[in-house]
Length: 303
Ligand code: 13P
Ligand code: SF4
Image 1 (tube, rainbow, N blue to C red):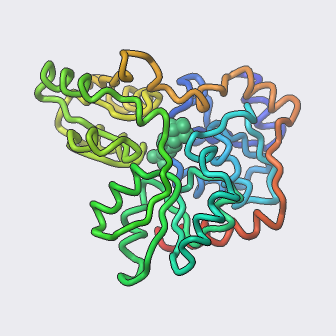
Image 2: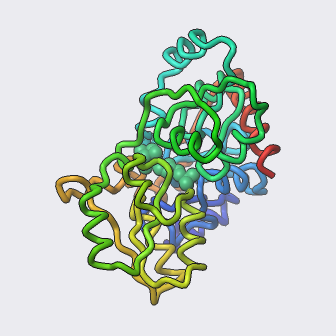
């Protein structure tokens, strides 16, 4: 940890971390946030180097917004099922099949898909952005169908959905949620909108990782059943150590509620990438410039 701090100073580097990172990575980070906050931070930092402790599409977003900076990612293989299951050539066909549609893509997609989109959203601003679009505009929504269904319900807008989903948020056991609620009747159920609708139906509050953290802090309740990746519980415990946060196991009681991609990053890999200044995220300038437009639009519409 000391060496990481020294190298950050020497290289004028900032460490950005998502809430699903291991606790020790969160502890050394300069900034922790949800996807929207991390994008905003990447766009405004004065650092020369961004060490992005998250997954590949998040580091790509940082590069799209700050092309002059060096963006390092501790493990270049830290992907995301949503991004990986929406290949740019298939997305192109999806658009061609619906030529009159406006394409809104969840930030969990590759730069090449962003480059073909009209607007980007995150789980924290999706409903608000969709509500701002003209009522008669037909809309495509990719790649998360669970988030898309929730946005449809919240906004009253009909969306044509790409059939993707997150392997982590699809794994939570509804039976386990009901059992936890029966054992803890005072507990509030808080959920990320990437969960399937049968799980969201049990939730008292639905929101992005930052919003879930904020809700658990401000609520007068002292127990929470947390329907998202359990990495977020570290910050919940730091902010309100006297409260209880219950994670929900996967269907078979497995620990597949942990994102296997986010968890590829380790403190050792953070140190190594700062020592070697690698792996570095590189991007084709043509794709970057095209992907920048719908992200810029998102930041303007959600400011
Ligand atoms: P947030 O934008 O809520 O941080 O979510 C990102 C993510 O990948 C959730 O699985
Ligand atoms: Fe992607 Fe799901 Fe991991 Fe989030 S939790 S980064 S959506 S695989």
